Image 1: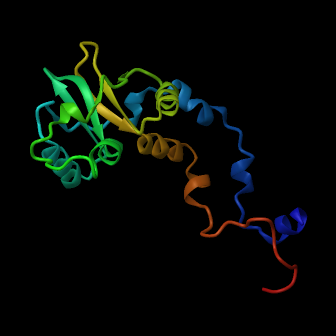
Image 2: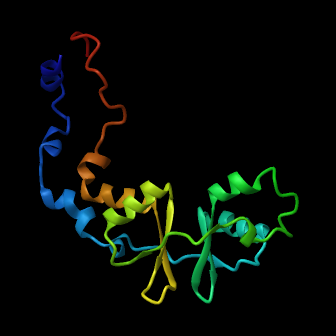
Length: 178
């Protein structure tokens, strides 16, 4: 059936899959997190209310807020924290403080760390957001799994953006028809 598929499907992307340009595939090991253009983090203090944090996340359409003291990360408050620690457990969001619901002492990266290392830390730790700090430990940015996915997609745009709306799965049902 594969030969029929190949013969009948001249618009497939086979040439892209057969291109073994090593530079493209090693970019995540050689490029630094800086190439992801980390977003400027939205930060609050540990004493800010959950109401404030959630309102900011909704308003800015972001999945994480840095919790900082003296520009240094002491925690991160994410969508997961809202789901696991807040919903149906906190009766007054205006009184509850971030310091009691944030994830304390988050793993941080530096802008010269490789994208592969960032992906490793995110995968092993189960994080979707990781803060970026400078040599003095001050928060300078934040990256997300989405940033990495968009970067990888930019390395192989033909394979990602030119996929047919409904890919062929398992071949044609019959050789007849239009």
